[in-house]
Length: 177
Image (cartoon, rainbow, N blue to C red; front, top):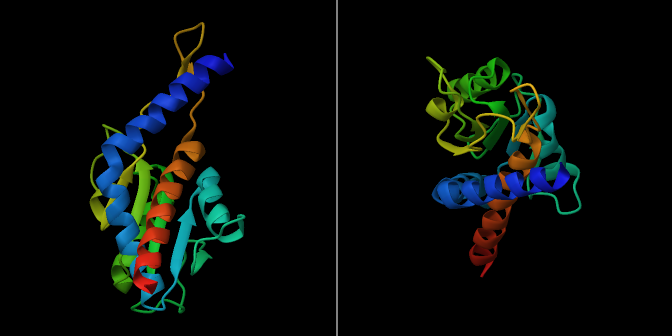
């Protein structure tokens, strides 16, 4: 089972790399503006996707200027700040509430999530200045009863985050030269 999961996961990560490369670069440029402009990067991860915010702020290689944000109103926002919202699906109500707050405050932000085809109205990919799709529509493995299991949203989210972080690191290295 693990071999099948790892094969499917490798395929998913490859698709994210191939199909979201431009969006990863755009998200990195947007977020790098905060670091270059002495602002902060507020990162909000809903539920299990808080793993991204924790990695960015408490990991072995933290993202410069990153702040783990709870998605709520704060008086700390400045014009130099940027944000990243990470959620399993783009229609998540908590993520959308945070996105609308950022819009109201004039804070540019990137989003990372999977889109659901049945989503109507506001979605993170429609509201965010830049959106990185996780391309997860269903769990990766079939079960014996026609269902599916193994939905690696946090792994995919961390993969996208690392793609963005590596590009930010390159941008900042060039900026310092």
